[in-house]
Every structure is written in C-alpha cells, then in structure tokens.
Amino acid sequence: MSQEQLDKAKTFASLHAGPETFVIPNPWDIGTTQILTGMGFKALATTSAGYAFSRGCTDGIIGRDEMLAHAAEIVAATHLPISADLEDCYGNIPEEAAETIRLAAGTGLVGASIEDCTDGAIIDFNLAVEKVEAAAAAAQAQDFPFALTARSENFIRGNPDLDDTIRRLQAFEAAGADVLYAPGLPSLEAIRTICQSVGRPVNVVMGLTGGTMSTAQLADAGVRRISLGGVLARAALGAFIAAAEEIQAGSYTFVDNAASFGKISQHMKRPEQT
Image 1 (cartoon, rainbow, N blue to C red):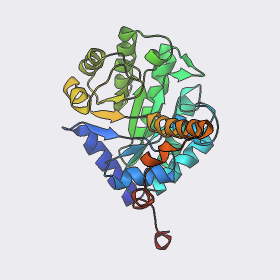
Image 2 (image 1 turned 60 degrees about the vertical axis):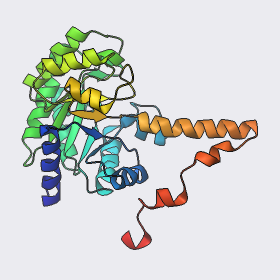
Image 3 (image 1 turned 90 degrees about the vertical axis):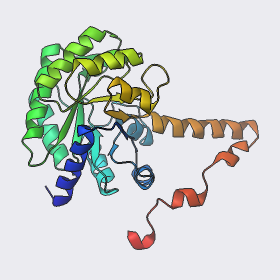
C-alpha cells in the first residue's frame, strides 16, 4: 500500500460517512476517466458492462485477470478514489471471493463490489452470505480502509421480491459489507424502505432503477451514494448508433451536437504529461 492509496481510501471513506449524498459515475476507459476527473467528480467506479462493450463482448464475459488489469489502468489514469465492479468476485466459493478482493486491493483500488448472482441466477442465500463474509474479511485485513459493496441482484434477475432483498442486504451488513446495493428497485418508496432497513450507506444505480429521480429526491430517501453503472457507456453508444443510422439514411445533423475538440481535449493529457 502506498501513501497515495491510503489517502484515496480515507477520502472514499469520508464520502460514505456523509452527510452529503455523492455521485460516483462509471468510466469505461482512460479517456472517459480523465473527462470525469476533469469535471470535478469526487470518486469513480468501473463498470463491467461498459468495459465489456468496449472490448466487443457482452457483460459477464470478461475474466478476473483482465478485469483487474482494466481496473489498474483506470486507477493509474486519475488521482481520484476508484471502486471496481467485480461482478460475483469471480468465484463460486468464499475463498475465491476473498482472493479476488486481495488481488483488487493490490491494484490500487480502494473499494469493490460483490453480487449474489452467478451466470444470471441468484445464488443460495447461505452461500451468498458466506461469500460476502469472506470478501469482507479480506477487505478488513488490508492496512487501509477498503470499502466492500454487497449487492442483492433480485430485481434485475427475475425475482422482484423486496422482502428477500432486504433479508439479503441485512445479512450482508451483518457479514461485514460497508455499502449495500440493490440494483433495479422499482420506486422511490422501495428505495426509502431499503435505506430504512439497513444501517450501512446505500448505493442506488441510475439507469436500472424505476422512474425518473433526482439527486435531491434520492438523498431525501436516505441514499448516500448514486452510481451510473453501464448507463454512461450505453448513452455514448446510443448516440454513436443513432449517428451511424443517420449516416446510412443520408444526413449528418448529428455533427451539430458533437462535442468540440477543445471541450474533449481540455481533459486529456498533453504529450509532455505522459
């Protein structure tokens, strides 16, 4: 652990301590990392989906070694604290989840997430808790505060059961998770219920959550952290596809909305900085 990593970890911990709700957007390469850094965000997180799309594959295909190498690249591209989307921590047993967290800490990351879903299916409750417990123990064994986020995937995996989601998040909290997270919650009221049911900071992801909600509304509901997951990558690729479709149709009006070279370049490293 370097002094820089320790400082980043302390900053990340202070953001979760509040009192303000903060946004942690998700870049998927060095360029988007530098843009978000230059825009003044306080912390960033990787996105497994966004990175997978950039590599020409669907989410869930990238293996542990490549994902950790990607995370290390993002860490090196910014002075901000970085947390990583590590899916199910790339293992079916607790020991593998713990090893993933140990390896993640070695890349310069100051946080990571683990989800209770493997190959698109929600895993057994007891196994999910055991994996979180092992991952949390590995995080707590570091000589800096490594923030573990535990995710209950029910609402995006065909099991929209709020009671079971709360049961899982409460168990993950008891197992040592620092942040709790249930993507795909259907309403602000469901989000408020989650926040009132646990004692750890709650993350909400935009782009999968039902309804249009503002930062102020989410903060009022008790949310401490707002992430974007793969939605920034989807928005960028959506604009790319729409532009390509317009080209095929024979017009080019999209160029009027394209960011200028200057607006992009102000966030990029100059040759003398590399």
